[in-house]
Image (cartoon, rainbow, N blue to C red; front, side, top):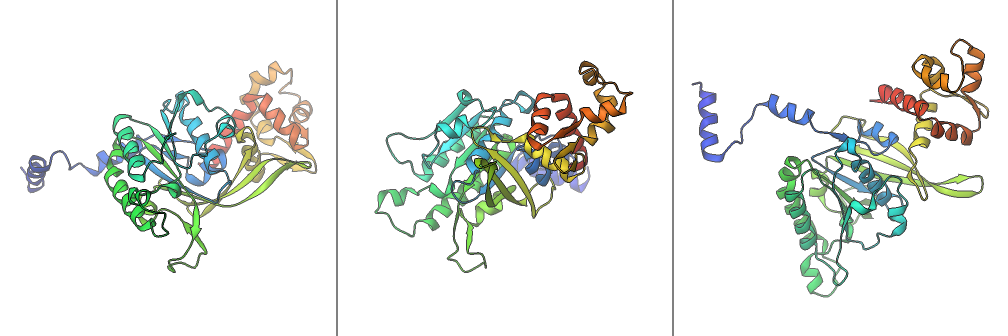
Length: 357
């Protein structure tokens, strides 16, 4: 027996199976599933959110954090991503009908909302509930909305004071330390929604910093910040908002420090097709000439769409008819065409993923 084997045997006898080869750990990480959020964010993140991880999502109020988290939850509910149980921890008490009905594909009946109708729960109680859920529910997804609204028990017992945050940060620090290994082993995902607060510490040139303390920042595998939002208008009516994200970190490589632009449509959630269109234009898969949009990617891959084109009575041999079929006037018609013809949309999404990821 080599010295290394003897050491491993000694450690295993004393502490249990705590020593593994790097190759085993690497294979385990490779096996972890990655779940998408939206095409634009997935590109910057390197594919999406990996199970067994922590996500920190920061922004000002009413900028789309909750909707984005619930859109991710809707993806997690899909069979292809494991039909995962979703728990929404409603600390702010602001979850409403619009939040739930306004996310396309979200199965509201299978979401468990954690809240108390009769009392204000302390941070310790909320975090204790999360700990119990994660321990007993493999592959669960927990949305903690928000960390900024958590209150330590000592501050609930006393009069409201302005100095409660250091106590809360210690509670959060202890929680993340104790839960780090459990979240990974259970392949759970914890999304921590936070707000920007005024920077009074003097350790940064930023006027606003993310709430929650240093330990939350350290624990988060994926960190997203909303840089700013714009109104998304159709003619004169506002139909949603355009969210500009900063991608600070991602365990999937991606492009830390990159920006992503997502489209949040009121009553629908993240508009996946709109994001795909914007990316396709950026990467010249769709050619734009004035008000006309030519689906060059579809023309180049017409053979792949042969069955679809046959059903539409478009000949592969007639290039003029082919180009005419895949040329549309105005982005409204372009979007409607892609939504009405899933084989074309699927091909475009697949082509983009091959380029971007």
